Amino acid sequence: MIYNIIDRRKRRYRWKQITAIVEPTYHDNLVEDSDETEVPEPGFFDYDEKAAISVADAIAWATSLAFPVTLYLYDLGQGINVAGRTA
Image (cartoon, helix red, strand yellow):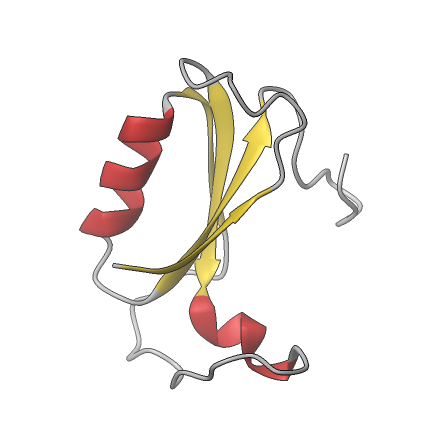
């Protein structure tokens, strides 16, 4: 279930193919002035990514998850790289 969406696309009118990343929303608890949520029950994952997905499919995917997530939208080919920095 989506609790928050962060749109980091530079090309904001591209919707057919983007990179979508989900993380549990509790990761945001340490951000200043954020709303907070509890750590989900066992069975959640810390990170998942889908490339070349449409915005509509990314929203459907994130909505289908059984725990609260933050959905990040990036331009296709962008997002989090192996070193953990945004590309």
